[in-house]
Structures are given as structure tokens and as C-alpha cells.
Image 1 (cartoon, rainbow over the protein chains, first blue to last red):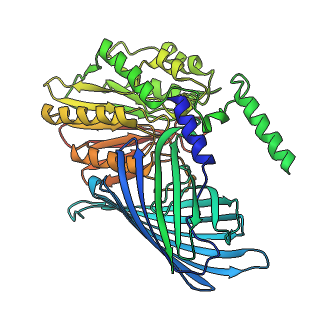
Image 2 (image 1 turned 135 degrees about the horizontal axis):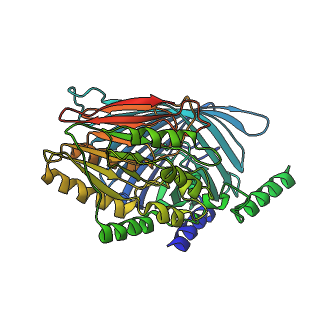
Image 3 (image 1 turned 90 degrees about the vertical axis):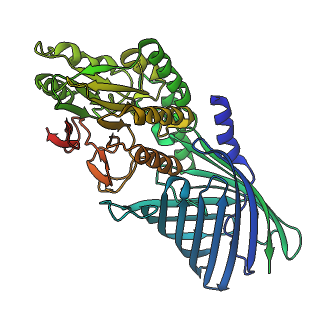
Length: 236
Length: 293
């Protein structure tokens, strides 16, 4: 088991990766993915997600994501990203609002994250903070504390690409405590990987994977969750 | 710069190979050397099957439970000695709990255990000390040492009063920040059984915490979000009254309707405000107070 979990961790770190944010592109895009997901709490389950990428103008882009899973946990996310071109690369401010719906556990959460980032052709980094509200669902007016506030959490995302964004294909690797559907606590890194291939001007196929170990900072890391997603994107 | 990074990494990895000279198992960040949660749970179950679960008799309907955590014993143990002395001196205390991180790093187990023999037991009463494992009790393959001295980390204990009322204490192993499948299944079964048994109070103890509201002391790791939410749901569904944990080193109290979740301060000597908790158990809802050292 130890070997298997080590292998999964290594694979997740080495797999070809897909950039979740389509840096440098100025095309509107819609993407659809289906995924196999597993964690030690829910077991195996399936996920379906749809996302839209909207480069409003040269200084502002948006991203919206929606996920449904058969584990009865869902997520809605919106990202607003002002960006400023620099002599080399560009700087951006990412404002991310994420609602996690966990009907199976009678809990919803809302997380707001604000990060400052810098991206170039081959590397993108961002660091920021987030605030989370955890709410019981349905809301119970008879209880004293329905909303738990975790006021400050650090967020980070470091991603490397092997090709420039103009390339018809790309692969990347990423470590972060954020995905499009979840913002984890500081000490819970998630390893992400994937790849994309642009078939023609409009169509693109995506493949991505992530691995979420636990106990890394307890110095006794073990497997917790993994997922593989495949789908396509249509660029307008 | 590149050379410095490579050299630092190499030194850290080499130090990880020698637990005698280094306190942190850096390689454990990627592949832990101690048993994983499912293996540890099986070890605990094996002991439970062979020896049963602790049944403790209180001498009155109202009694006190002393709870400490994060003693991180290494070269000093003043707080830990004080805790042992205090719970043994209290005639109303039949049960004391340690919620993990008993030691700071390997090689300190016997030094940590010694006060339990050197501080005399109170001839006027009987008491029991129970513990669970924390992350500091695990790395560098310390689970074997923990088992040698503390026998298990997933179990329950029942305290019975003279009139036959019973309080249930459930102990969970979250040493690597996860409950895992087997332990979660056992917890569900235990709570279902508890529903039928009509316990007066149900208390659940772990090392890592559910929430992190106070960040004044910095961040500490805890269970993944999915597991945290599933656990909260389970505890509330079964009317758990008190959830006790440590790991964060700083006191934090969260009321979730009928359940109260408490992060207890660390009792380590080097901490800024070492303290332990005394819970008063009687026919009314559980009350508690902190004792600052």
C-alpha cells in the first residue's frame, strides 16, 4: 500500500498537465469534462463539470465553473482576473468566489480568495489569502452558531508549462491548495497535472489529474484523494 | 543559489535517514515511514478484540475528566508532571485524557512515561489515563513505540456512575490528519450502537481539529475538507455533546448547536500559555473550565 501511495504521489507530480487557466488566450471558450474521482471519505464517484473562460478585454478576464458529482457534493466558482502586461509576462490579481455545496453532509461553504500573481510563457505563480464561511444546511435559527468563519487562510499556486501558450499542445505541472472547485487549508497541498491538444481553431481536448495526499506536514504523508478528468473545449 | 538549494535538500534528506541526530523526518512529507491510518486502526482493533474496552467506575454521579494535549515532552516535562499530579490529587477524577503529541520527537517515550511511575498514585481512589496519537508521536516509524506504551489509538471508554448512568468517550486516531475509511466506518457503527444504548453524554476526542477560526498563532494542518464536513455531519447526527482536540496549541471554542468543539491549549513547557481542561460530568449538559499553568 505504501508503494502504491508513493507511486500515485509521484505520478501525480509527473503526469502531463493541463493549464486550468488558459493564459494568454483571447478567445472565449467553453469546456466540458467528465471525471473519475476517489477519496477515502466518499470512495469512488463521478464528476461532471462545465466551465467558461471569458477574456473580456486586454485587462480583464473571467472564468466560471460548475461541478456536479455523484457523491452529492457540488461547486460553483467565479474568478475575476484583472491583468496588467509587463515588459516580460503579466501580473494579475485573482479574485475567486467559490461556493461548495455538500448536501450529503448538510453543510455549505463559501470561500472568497484574493491573490496576486505573475505569469510568463512557462511559469505562473500566485499567492494570496482566503476567507471561508461554513454554514449548516438547512439553516437552523434555533442554534447559536450556524456560520463558522475561518477568516484567514493562505493560498498559493505554482504552475510550470513545457510549451508556450501559442503552442497547439501543452503540458504542465502544478502545486497549489486551490482547484477550480475547492480551496483547501494552507497545509493541504494538491498536486495537479494534465495536458491539452488543440485539434483545430475551435476544438481542443483536455486531460487532467490531481492527487491530494494528507499528512505531508505531519511528516507521514499518505494518499487521500485523486481524480482524472477528460473532456473538450470549444474556443469561439 | 541552485547549489544552496540542492545542498540544503541533500542535508535534509540525509538527516532524515538518521533519526538519532535529527528530529524531523523530511522524507515523510512524501512517503511516511510510520504505519498508515488503516494499519494503525487494525492494530488498535486487534488490541480492542483481545482486551476489550476500558470500563471505568466513577464514585459519584458527578465527576471530573481531566484533559490535556500537546505536551511535546522532550527535555522538560513540568506541565505534564503538574497535570499528572493534579488529576491524581483530585478525588472526583476517575479519568484523565491525553489528546496526542505526547512527545516532541523520537527517543523521548520513556522520559515521558516516567512521571506516571514516579508520581505516587492516590491511595484514596482509582483513576485511568487514556491517550491517542498525534503527528509528533508517529513519524520516524514511532507507531511501534506508541503501541508498546499506549496499546491503541482507536477505541472507546465508558464511565459508569454508581446509579448506572454511563458516559461514552470515543477516541479517534488522526495522527496524520485523516480518519480513513476503516476508522470512519467504525465510528459510524459505534455511534449507531451508542444511539441504542442511551448514554448520558457522548464525548469524541481526536488530535487534529475541525475548524481554524483563530489564526493568531499561525496555521496548523488538519483533516481534508471533505472528511471534516462528513465528520461534523456524523457527530451532529448522533448528538455528540463535546468534541475535544488539540494540535493547534491555542484555545478555540466553537458552538455548533448542541455540540461544542474545543481546541485545548498545548501543555508543552515552551508554550506561551500552557493549560489543561477539566470537564464536569453530571446529569446536566457538560461544563468545563481551563486550568492555566
